Image (cartoon, rainbow, N blue to C red; front, side):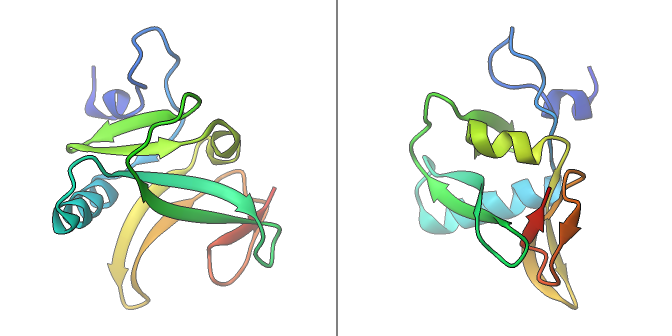
Length: 125
């Protein structure tokens, strides 16, 4: 199985693949931040909530708790968590980390977003 295909597998063998890309750059940055905190139980939670100038906005937080409806992805020794409601908006998205002239930040490329705002953290479907 290719590395890309393995990235898309959820932890349960019978579960369908997760239609989401968690890049090496994002995973490496999460690992760096978790190591700085000194708590290996931390996982990156990505979520969608109402708000922002386009109707929905992305959020990122660290969490030690895995909820029953969470989808988990593990890459490079770190775990990404997405709740069931957010997953429907993030299906097919790419979660990346960029460090360029515009600054250093996690970036979501979401094919479901019909419009986005200039800041890149708000969208509508």
